[in-house]
Length: 348
Image 1: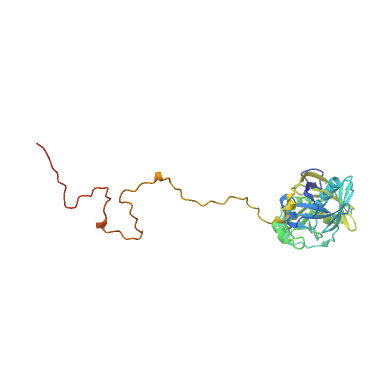
Image 2 (image 1 turned 90 degrees about the vertical axis):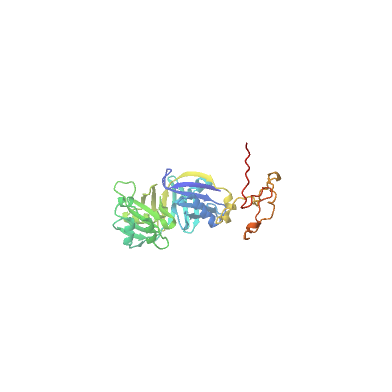
């Protein structure tokens, strides 16, 4: 069972958004898939299985906390590994997902990913959300795949220190706790807009680079700037760039990938598939032996003095009268009371 860790939407390691890609021959139980994703501790783990058709796979995404309905960077990473290492003769791979058919193509500049274009609807963001983000207000707000708010400047997005718990409580709906924050880029920058993406509702406080969020933002900025394509920069700690072109029904993202790790998962994962939720078994141990009193050899037994071999009285028995108390026969009897010893003095 192979595994890759791929840094997506970047041309160099330790930037972009890391995703694990795990190709399977057949689906494992959901509990096992979730356990693998939780153990990976990456924003997403992508699992792919063949459908039987050439270049066609089923694809599912898991965060460390739950399965998600769509993930752009993990789809790009999965497509890149299939096209470059598993089926290098292909130029296109199609994924059947909960979000519909997603297409990844190999190009001289990297890989393209087609994501569905969601209808954009205006949204009046609540004032408490501005306080949670630490900003004075919003220039615009809308809802597509996610809730999106627009700030006035790039600096406001970069310097923002949001209250993650408050975002999770304020943003409701099907994509609860998921928020995109964006602004136009400063003059002279090599990109058109900047963004950040927070997803505490999916178990990820801040995602490094988010393809599905770019699918919301690209049509908005293309319409606002009157451009056919735009370049965006996600201002997370890792950072990443993406070029996007909008069509009538989809958003085509162009990105690169860098492979960080190639490895294998232990085959026992498949054998233990139905035991993920059980506690591990304790190692066998020997049965405890009953404790016995230690018997001393006969040579260490102290012999009783004459007269001391009488049976002991019960604990609650009254003491015998004084006249019955006699010293052992091996001792001389004391002189009787009233009779002083006779002392004889001899001399000249």
